[in-house]
Amino acid sequence: EKEPVTVLVTGAAGQIGYAIVPMIARGAMLGADQPVILHMLDIEPAAEALKGVRMELIDAAFPLLKGVVATTDAVEACTGVNIAVMVGGFPRKEGMERKDVMSKNVSIYKAQASALEKHAASDCKVLVVANPANTNALILKEFAPSIPEKNITCLTRLDHNRALGQISERINVYVSDVKNVIIWGNHSSTQYPDVNHATVKTCSGDKPVRELIADDQWLNNEFITTVQQRGAAIIKARKLSSALSAASAACDHVRDWVLGTPKGTWVSMGVYSDGSYGIQPGLIYSFPVNCEKGNWSIVQGLKIDEFSRKKMDATATELMEEKSLAYSCLN
Ligand code: NAI
Image 1: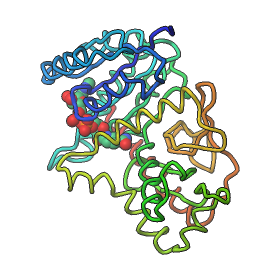
Image 2: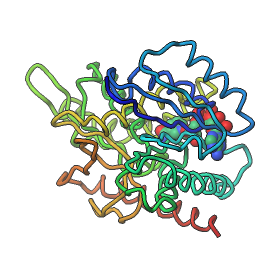
Image 3: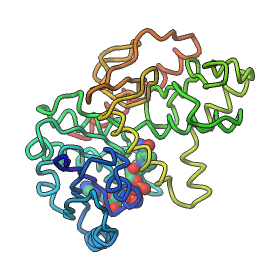
Image 4: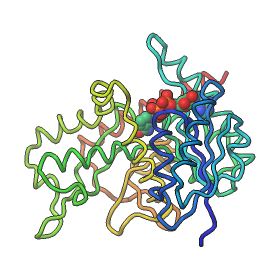
């Protein structure tokens, strides 16, 4: 039997936490033959609820689950961690300024960066889910300089999966037959869901989405805004934000990162920009990536038309603004 992998989930007493821990314990993140130890971190006001989650994990008797730690101590939570899924954060409440929310999250991510840097496994892989996801990941990277920048990512896979879902619904094909959409940029309403390279598997081979959906009007407008605004639509319908789809996407993100993407298929991940596609180096920006042997690499050489260029730059501009706002909170 394989050695267990230790997975940290922060904000584990929250909605996404409650949805993701059973997925991890069932093997949806690391494979059905990979034992796991779960470390769950939350803050003092949620300590009782967190205990309850631990009780349920024990009651579920998951065969792959080799240990559960539920704690409000960041050092204990981060010790020996191989995969860190950062879901904990400070949500925007009614009447709060953007700067106040940013400031709270900057201090959380600065502190947790240090705890991870000091106590996690040296090859720890980090996925930031909590919003503002890209900028939280950037702060984590800045304050954990000994963690390789390649190991710090943020979640845009939910947006990617939403784009696949919209195409599948529109032309009535299986979602598993749609691939290679791209989410560029920020996990926010400025993100750019791009279908220019996406294809659908048909009985006569892979066909471009642009050929199967000849309606450019829909693809260039409604499709994009539907994906961008999907989070808000879920809140409106459920009176709660998306949790099961976010948890599932976080599992997809880590699974593909660790176990690899299928040949000819890419996924979207928020990663450290090396300047690819003219995006300012150092931003955490969502790109199309291929993964192999635990490493991601940005898909190179895709043709970018003028429409895409504008949208890719607009979301980069927003990320630069978020970055300077975050830095202004540090002082
Ligand atoms: P939630 O409010 O139900 O749970 C958040 C949990 O984090 C709470 O239990 C809270 O006590 C905990 N927490 C707060 N500060 C913490 C700290 N310093 N350390 C550890 N835990 C802390 O929220 P939910 O619905 O689970 O969402 C979590 C985050 O994920 C939010 O920021 C949300 O905006 C974001 N999100 C991101 C998505 C993405 O695609 N990137 C999709 C959906 C949500």
